[in-house]
Image (cartoon, rainbow, N blue to C red; front, side, top):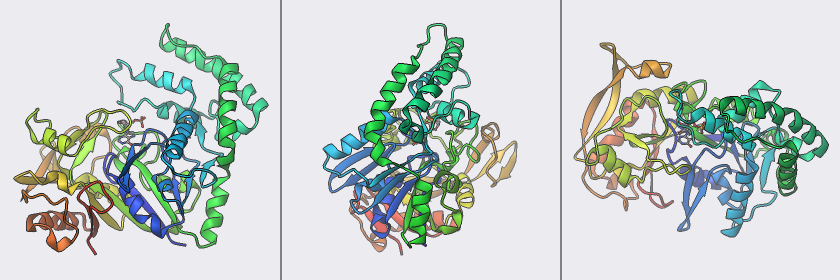
Length: 429
Ligand code: IMP
């Protein structure tokens, strides 16, 4: 009954996909439990680069069953597109990919609602524009939400769409006089077309997963986004609309948390963030500054939107908070090689908030906005480390950086990544 979870401890894009890929040999089923096609997972495997947004990255391993849990919001267009891309790349996708009948469906009106809310609003979140927020709103509002399982009941789906689309058209027109209007019958026909191709994958995943656990199968939970984007525990309101921390695993998969035996927290050796919201250690230091150096070397541009990511120093106040929240047992440090050109490296160890030194992460974006980072400075190693495979071969200053991070977080560092390839990995134990 051993289950593992891999969760990001920052604002997403921590390279969780690589850790999931390294762990697949030891597991039978990989499960996504939150979000949708807002995630951007890049995995380099056997020299090929795969970009996945909605499907679990574990699907790249032929022996794994891949499950999209009930906690996700699914756009059928994206789902079928990713399936096709994988098949075109020679990856077999059939009954090894299972989609929960309780996951919620994203419709084009969700994308339109989001576009109208985000555009030009002073309250904009800087979302990925994938309809994630409006779909979760409809899930929670109950009367407007439609689940994947409803795709298999054409008459029922048509009836529901007639009621919902009429309401949506009213809302959208209220937001903008020129807004698109949607036709319920056209939408229903379109989605029933998708249903034909998706039918094979749709199942009761709660039963499937709990049976698997009872049979002794090992589950690997793949988090999307990072803990600081969690709707309950992140930097609200600049968050995504799901529980992207480990807190989402139980509700988003139906597998009780008591089966989790290994919780792995993934961090970058620095911090990045896309979208709006406070970021105390951000290096907004111009085109020749360290922020831009990190962005360029780390190729910090969004996988989903292509937006340049905001970059800054590692922040152990926020990461420590995420680790506590997730009951994290061990940490993996990714993209350490990106810092190799820097003469010195900073770690944020506390904040100054209204003249006081604090080490507890403040709840809420408006409070975090008032925090200034207090740094500890370590010497850089100024040496290419991308070909190093053993801990002892790392320059002394790189080892020191890893050790100090572990000490500050009071957690062991189990893996250090020095490049995107599977081989560019240092096992610390
Ligand atoms: P949404 O999830 O599209 O609603 O976007 C809400 C916030 O979460 C925005 O700041 C996005 O940039 C951010 N976000 C969503 N998914 C990811 C991700 O996979 N990586 C990093 N940020 C993300």
